[in-house]
Length: 265
Image 1 (cartoon, rainbow, N blue to C red):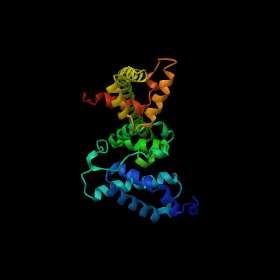
Image 2 (image 1 turned 120 degrees about the vertical axis):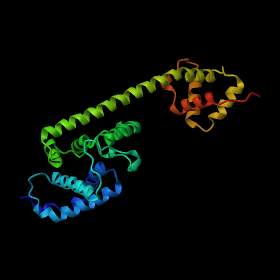
Image 3 (image 1 turned 90 degrees about the vertical axis):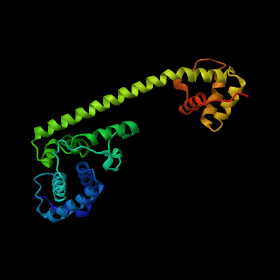
Image 4 (image 1 turned 45 degrees about the vertical axis):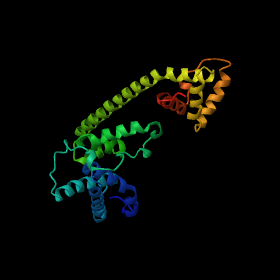
């Protein structure tokens, strides 16, 4: 029998309110429903906390209540309950932002915004039978045993669904890096234009009208001007210039300048 004094209701609410809400939202995709389910779940926790015998972890017990309350809530609303295996995320019916709280995950600073969004959408769009094992195990850090208890599955079934979810994520990650590599290749194809432009500008080989127009184009870019001032000095030593040497802001300025039509005087 666990020491119930250790389970202060206020502490439980603070620790699990977002987790319960997230689990409900992952099933309903409706913020108002998730709020109602969260309230129902904590009412049930308050009512039954004295009966918690510690046969599973507290978190497993709470997730189990939240999961059951979600299914019960949907039935009470007389919604047509589609098979959990086919329930998918609808972009049109929610505006809840990212599904994963990236700030609480390790190495979040190593993931760029585009990658986070693509991975987040992958999880959102998974059939729920795969999404829930992934969220419970990889995000909420429940063990295979505890996660399977929450969903009422055998451990092997939970592991099979989790493996399938991981494969879905793996495919999307592979696609992401493939797309990124293709984007960088396209970017590299323009580097020759940018570097030639900078070399011509620094060595005075641009025609005067074009040089004057470019100076006006970058007048508000301190980083661009600073780089070009330094490079003009370095050009006396070497003409070498690599694309990766160019600041991103200068690349953008050159791109918009080259594409912008300039009137002849």
